[in-house]
Structure formats: structure tokens, C-alpha cells
Length: 229
Length: 216
Image: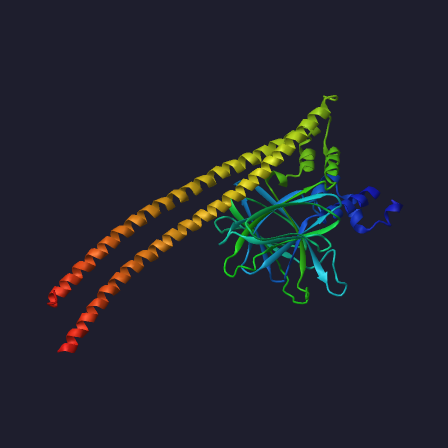
């Protein structure tokens, strides 16, 4: 009782909270894979930062889903500011880097385009972050009871882990396919709009031009008659 | 007690691993999530303000809030709430499609960040990634094997939902393609017919005009 006095208040509060609620409360533990889709307006540049530990692996994959030429400039910089990747006017790309400690910055640049905004999808896959073991250890605190099989439990757990990683891979491939499909669909829809619009314009222009032609010819002859008499 | 402090430290260290970006005071950042229906999405964010004097980002910012707005594919607002400088928002989709998640700070006082930079750490989890397995284990009293089997089941269910949504999108895609194809065909035929008709009308009209003016 007496030795609790010197503890700061937040730690006391944390100790008071039942351990079950801890993983979800307060700060969040971000997952190792995340993907984002956002709209980049014309003439703008947006940068994102990802803190990394030593000797982890950072894989970034991006794709332009919508917007005029479907291209964007991409720039990846190390925590010291050194440019690791610089790509111009590409529509998709994949890059993997072995990391050092610090914040990696990657930027999408749409400054070359003056009127079209781009929809960009990017996915970050982080490996060897050193937190996965902790996650599995944490689970041991929250389970109740034991499974009846003892000797073969490790084998079962191993095959479950392998299934889990393969399913994650399936999930990743799905995300990729979804991005491809979204891009193709956007292309198609813009084709559709274009066909409609230009056909209408074509029709109007044709009719107007032929009317003007007839009118002008008529005018030509009318004036001549008048000047004669 | 030492364990609690360590855990707190571990949690803080872990939360600093999220992706972050900088936004200005009145700037709004939007992210698009294309998700199937009946899918839960959980977003976690943490904000840090730039302290001009110390030239660092303050670890926490009392009094600063972020406004989160989520719109469903039809443009209807699903969630529009204000949270503190650190928060967590959740919503479940009822229609499949592009949901837009927008964040902007609620700061009206210009003095709050005169430097104009706010660092936002963001993490968005969709579907089975949003499940909190330790919580599920404690609530349903599961053994380790049961918990892992439950996770696999959730993963497979999410993949299956995505596949169903993929079928629906492919159908829409195919309808648009076929409609475009048809329209190209019909417009070309219509154009040719109109061209021919206009030519005939022109010639006839001019001929009758010339005949009337006694030139032919």
C-alpha cells in the first residue's frame, strides 16, 4: 500500500484497469500491414512517414487508380534524408527496403498535372518488426483452460500458423486485385463518358455545319441578285 | 507495479510505429476504403502538435480535437463526430463500395498552431483485422487452439466476403463495357445515316434553290 504512493497517476490508473481491457485501450498497436487510398488534388504533393526499427523490412506498393494519365511521381527517402527511390510518371510500383532506425518518408507528387486529380492506392507491408512474438505471448494471458492434446499441440499450432500466413497472402492478393479492378473500372467508366460526350458533340457539329453551309450559299446568291438590280 | 509501467511503455512504443502525416490547420485529409457490406472498420489516430519554441512535436495536445466524418458510397454521412487529440472511431458498412473517411482538426483559434503543422498518426483496420482476439478469448473463454481456429475462420470469412463483392463489381464492370460497346456501334451507324441524309437534303435544297433562281 505504502510503496504505491511514488507511482505516477497514469500507471496507477493502468494498474487499476483489468488486464483484459488493456490491449484495446489507451494507445493503439498498429498492425504490420496497412493500405490506404486517397485523392491527391492537381498540383499538390503529399508525404507520409513510417517509423521503423533496425533490420526490419519495409515493402511499399502503390498504384494510381483514377485520374487522366494514371501516373504519379514517387519518392522514398531514408531517415537521414537520402533518396532511396525516385520514380517519375509511373502508374504503379513496388519497392522493398531493409531498414535502419528512424522515420522513412515517401511522397506522391502530382505537381506536374494542372487539372487532373489522382486517386492513389498504397500498401505498406512490414516484416521482422520484432513485435509478433510479443503478440503471441500476450494471448497466453487471455486464454482459459488448456487443450487436452499436449504432445501434438505444437504441430497443430505450427500448421495453424502456416495457414494463417497463407491466408494473409490470399488477403494481400485480393487487395491487389481489387486495386487493379478499380483502376480498370475507372478507365472503362471514363471511356463511356467520353464516347457519349463526343458523339453528341459530333452530331451537333455536323448538323450545324451543314445548315451554315446551305445558309451561306444562299446568301451568296441573294446578294448578287440584289446588286444586279 | 513494475509490470504495469513496462506495459505502458511498451504500448506507447508500439503506438509510435504507426504511419503518420502532417496536416495544416484547416486542411482536411480524406482516405477511401473500398469495402464489402457488413464489414467493421476501426480507425485509431493520435495527434501531436508542433511546438515552435522547442522545435519538437509535443507528445500530447490537450484541448485539440479531430473531427471525423465517414460517408458511404451514396454520399450519406455514416459517422460525423468530434474526438479528442487521441481517439478511436468505428463504423460498420451497410452498402458495399467506396467509403470516404475524412479527418480535420477542430481548431478555430489561430494561435493553437501558428506553425501550421499537426502530426497525425493513423491506423485503419478493416474486417477481421479489426477484431481484438485477446478480448474475444476472455469473453468466450477459449483455449489457445480454439482462439487460433476462430481467427482462421474470421480470416476466411472476410476473404469470402471480398470475393462476393468482387463478383458484384465485375458484373457492374461488364455491364458498363457492354453498354459502351453498344453505344459506339449505334452512334457510328447513326452518324453515317445522318451524314447521308444531310448530304441528300443539302443537294436537293440547293438544286431547288438554283432552279428557283433560274440559274440551272
